[in-house]
Amino acid sequence: GAGVSQSPRYKVAKRGQDVALRCDPISGHVSLFWYQQALGQGPEFLTYFQNEAQLDKSGLPSDRFFAERPEGSVSTLKIQRTQQEDSAVYLCASSFGRSSGNTIYFGEGSWLTVV
Amino acid sequence: KQEVTQIPAALSVPEGENLVLNCSFTDSAIYNLQWFRQDPGKGLTSLLLIQSSQREQTSGRLNASLDKSSGRSTLYIAASQPGDSATYLCGGGNKLTFGTGTQLKVEL
Image 1 (cartoon, one colour):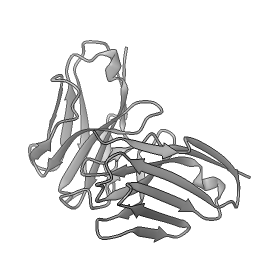
Image 2 (tube, one colour):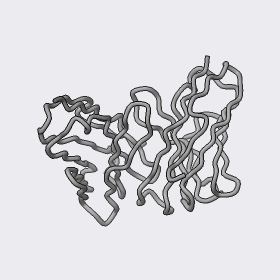
Image 3 (cartoon, rainbow over the protein chains, first blue to last red):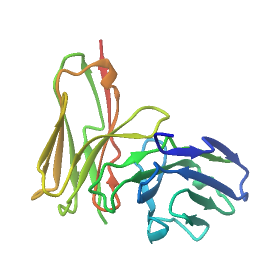
Image 4 (cartoon, rainbow over the protein chains, first blue to last red):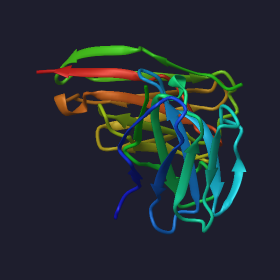
């Protein structure tokens, strides 16, 4: 596809369940970002990949959050033992270059509700 | 920790008005800044990117400027239209730190 694709678009998880959110960046994009956006707030940085290397994971809120991009294209954000405070929209973004000095393209997000 | 403030938080204007949205960073060492719009239930769409060597960018009715000495950016929208109604977010720095956005409503 032409844009950043995320799946699932909507996920309802029971508290304690593990979830996996997938991101297909634009083909050829080197940089990939994950953000968490709570209702009425701006996106909060979670983690950054340059190709397959996870260069920054300082925004991951706990060790229950894990992200990978093993072949430098598709990325998966995994949340273990989900809790209610994990309910949010998870946004993936990609850019062609290696820094934030390039236009960043966002997917439409994965809406996670933990009940 | 970098913090971003966007003013105003919400704005309602009649169609045709020119308007200004403001964004400021606590750490003025912002080298790249982007303005985005977000429609309800959607992701962010990049509007303008100001790179480290630039001070402003223009696209159609939109103009964004960045004062690096103060860490402040302004998005100017000329001749606003109902289709401009959305939340506008600024993001800057290596990790793209965002503000909470300005909710804009342009009324007929």
